[in-house]
Length: 311
Ligand code: UD1
Image (cartoon, rainbow, N blue to C red; front, side, top):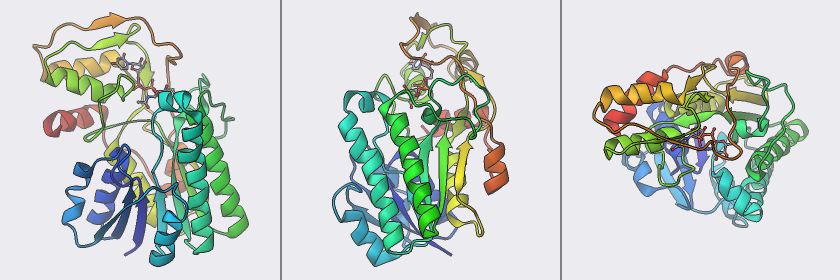
């Protein structure tokens, strides 16, 4: 069994990744500063004697290095980040610190203390508004936000370290991740988390545009599985892979599923399309299958059924 360090462990994707690793029998150390992560997300993990936790900011000088020097983990899964695209636009400096600089510190800690593997939370945002669908990793990244740019820069920093210092780096370009523990609080939260909350409250949802826009929605359980494979599977080579399903779902498709569970909810409200919204986004899942042996397991229907059941 391996010992894995997870940064951003109390976040949406982080906490599911921790749970997955613990269930597979690994030892897990989590780090989080609770800027956007929540203690409640680690309730299940906290019951395991194989889980340890440090309340620390990855970007703080020496913080990560100290933990890695002591633990010498078999892998680091780096999920700590400034996670909001609009926040990166409002505060590019903070985006640089929390996304680019923090990733450089992860790469350096791995180099200094000979951690053989790093898994990194990148994003479909590196593709910007490319319309060459489905999006393959080989097309040039053309980010259209400080967030997307930081993710692309971070991939490069890590892959440069991989080539120069012999570590294995896996960069995961997550598409639209959904599932339990996703925070619906902001208007820019993931659309599924917002729809879920509105339906529970018996309120109408707002659709920006005609609802025919599509996304490649992937369950957080699949994302956690991909992270666990990338951190622990022997013999992997460094590289970048989309973590997606390869299936497009429209907002109207989503609403149909919600309405089965909440038939009494008021009709939708139609709003103007959001500025900067892309119409379609779809990932090609082939590289993740070839490089990791990963394919998504959970359909949107199954994922929504679970979300609606457990909240
Ligand atoms: C994601 C990011 C967003 C970023 C964009 C471009 C998240 C949660 N969102 O948006 O910040 O600008 O990539 O890289 O990471 N919608 C509604 N009603 C709602 C909420 C959303 O109709 O109440 C629509 C949106 O206008 C959009 C679709 O649902 O067309 C999906 O929205 P969202 O979940 O924010 O994902 P992205 O658009 O992919």
